[in-house]
Amino acid sequence: MATRYDAIVIGGGPGGYSAAIRLAQLGKKVLCVEKERLGGVCLNWGCMPSKALLHVGEVITAARDLKEMGVVFGEPKFDLGTLNKWKSKMIDDLVGGIGTLFKANKVESLVGVATVVDKNTVSVKKADGGQETISADNLVIATGSEPVALPGFERNGKTVLNSDDAISLAEVPKTILILGAGVIGLEFATIYKRLGADVTVVEMMDRALGDTDLEISTLLLRILKKQGINIHLKTKCSSVDVHSNRIVAKLQGEVNVMHEAEKLLVAVGRRPRTSGLGLEKLALAMDRGFVKVDERRMTSVPGVFAIGDCSGPPLLAHKAMKEGVVAAEVIAGQKSAYDPMAVPNCVYTDPQVATAGLSEEQAKAAGYDISVGKFRLAALGRARTVGISEGMVKIVGDKKTDLVLGVHIVSPTAESMIGEAVIAIEMGATVEDIGLSIHPHPTFAESIMEAAELMHGRAIHVVNTPVKT
Image (cartoon, rainbow, N blue to C red; front, side, top):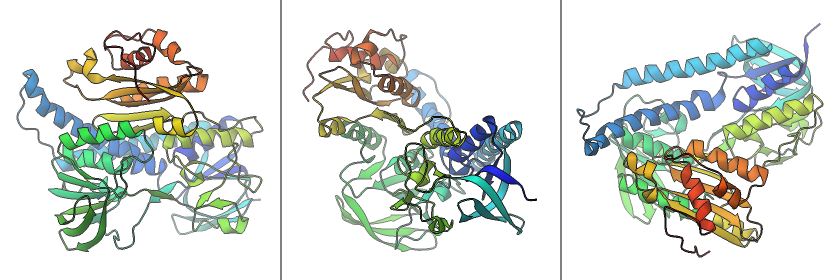
């Protein structure tokens, strides 16, 4: 008799492997089907390799900047072959780590392309060409997302790239044009600029980073432009001529030019991977390609769950991981739900941006009478010790209750600092709670305390002037 599972997880990315491991921890027999490599986009083509390249660029930039502090190196050089070997080994180690966790937790895995037959059956075309039909009491759809392709800007992997191509550098181009000033576009702009390319970014909207707090995204763009990254808002690329070793793009808007570059990176967003899975057989409720789910991550069909990017924004690995755990616990009969008050978002530019909760614009739109506290890194001793004067922590609070509504950071180590904000919002902390909590000195984290104290007129390292909202 064929094996029947308690659950089949389709997709082995952060959401999928988290769901599979948690299910196994709860005593369920689980199979994870992944069409390529465990870890999904995050480990193999996204989060991890991009942060590795950002780190290498950060070291190169630091080596140049240290001259002002009296430390002199020769001009930094890097060997791209060695860099790619190191990056590949790092990825292999992480992917192998997921496999080890599967083995330790008795999670079964299968490499192949899964197609849904019905709500309890999946057909898998295996990597060796064979076909297998598998049954389970529950299905978890965790198929993630993929880069949006623009008509007229077809990817060829050589001169016209998407983010998957851009992470595997065969060479560093002398010039690159990036379409999109979202997280992906700005992170790759930082990578390529640090590695020596001339970078131009164009964005159709009048702002970068989507619905990030406007003051924060404006500050970041000003800093990136000072670093030599050319950024044009309210500008579209209306057409592109593709040649064997270059592209010529027609830009219209803030600038109106024919722009020539060696590479074009299309980074205008990601879309859910939900087509071709056979989901139409289940008649699932959908929304613009995303699978609609409730707070338990259950779809409109009982026993079928969806998690991560394929179930809707924000498209973030840590959000997918949490959803995977929730879905697993619900399948195991526990009372679990996904209902966060704050999902952190990090942008690994130089400096980093990290946000949690409501932006100033969102808080006002929601009807709050807000208070705002801003502490600029120019007044932070720790920032000055590493030669940094630009950046800011901004807190948005409810003037009536003093509750923390949102925290927005432009700073080195912002990725780590934002955890304090998430806990504060989730626990219902007040601005005063943050201000009264002793933060270590000298650190970047104390800028959060200073911003909070400023809101109550008690800041020490800046003049306490009222902030107009």
